[in-house]
Image (cartoon, rainbow, N blue to C red; front, side):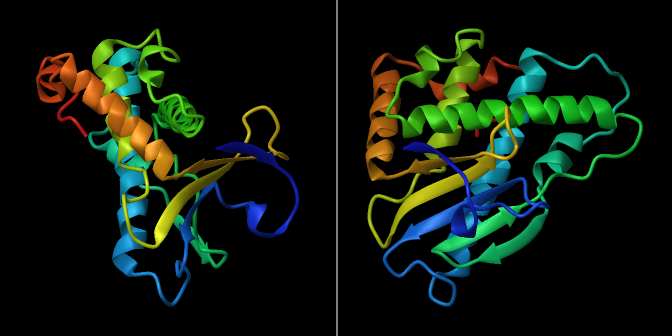
Length: 218
């Protein structure tokens, strides 16, 4: 599910927050949810963003030489700027950008951030086969990798955690907020898409290995 929102309260984003990740379900609140559950989804988003930056760099690299090693890992490690109730809401900020290659890194980060959210939004809208439709300019291996990234952001099959929501400002108007919610129905659609790829004898590992620019399949 995807909605545009305006106003204050749980739908608002503090000025220093780039996005919010909200865990929702019966008993999912501060004081009762485990730290492991919170860390799992923060880390899934971090690794997913890191993998998406790698995709963008492999497909459309910014022509800059001599950049520092491990800059992608650093850029994807967003600062934690707060936690709130209303379920459990984790607020993440914008990565620090400085040094000689800040502009190039900012460009790559921005493209990856938009691509990741487009992928999440497609899954939330029930378009489980978005890898075949919405990203026609990407090579097949990149589409498959995005499918795996989104799958790891889904809620579990069972248990109290039922929905994962992502809140961000829209690229067109920073006064408007975009809320994307992934639920168990979205998970089922993604699993069906993965099964479809496996039925067509597509090996995720084999595809990843053939791409020297991408070190591992996330």
